Amino acid sequence: MKLVRDTWLIYSRQMSLVLRQPTWIFIMLIQPLYYLVLFGPLLKQMPTEQMGFEYGAMETFVPGLVIMMAMFGTLFSGFGLIAEIREGVIERMRVTPVSRLALLLGRSLRDVSTLIFQAVVLVLLSSLIADLTINWGGLGLMLLIVLAIGLGLSAASYGVAIVLKSEDALAPLLNTITQPVLLLSGIMLPLTVAPDWLKTLANFNPFTYAVDAARALFNGDLNDAVIWQAGVLLGALTILLVFWSGRKFAKSTS
Image (tube, rainbow, N blue to C red; front, side):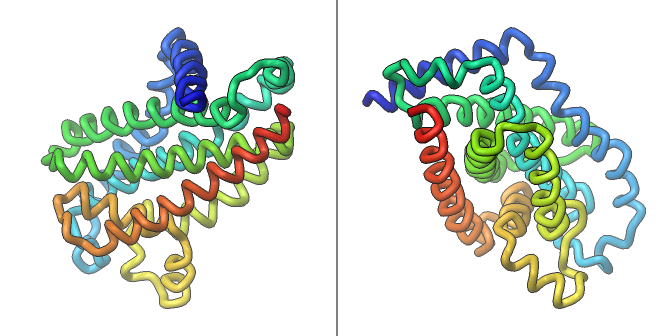
């Protein structure tokens, strides 16, 4: 119960800081909206059936955008923590009785809450711009995938940040990791027409399953086997990342 109470206290404080400056919530939507407005129309002119699109062009592209936002919107959360370390916030936490894991979970849940709101707004705007029909049941399940990605990557970002304690080290490390993961996930275009060696590499990327599952759910294909595969992989990955980051957080604040 102490962990739950402390997590709620940290989460409430972090959310109050976000709500004081809600502009940042919408600023994070600008990049995916650029892709939607400036890149999406190009897909409509392509022979999607020949390119291996299982669904329509925008029905394939929009779920990929949501997953991309989930990855980039939370993986760079650690930069804020580095600022708190520099200002002595984490140092002062050492003398408090607050659970060390709660310090991590409260921040990560703040990031997830913001992310879920942004994902819903992006889908609603996409439905207006691209005239898409929303499958609400599938959307709800897709948001669970977004939640798992957000929680795991946010925790990982905080864990790495508290180890490195430097923006100059964190930025190139995250960029080096995210670029191949992004390209191998099929976010921009499906990998169905990719060469075999590229498909083999993509099979080892858990976010490939997340993107495929998001597309299936977004289009109401709830019986696709990739959905439970993504759930198992992302669930295990999230638990692993939260556990690892929690240990790093505990050591740094004890």
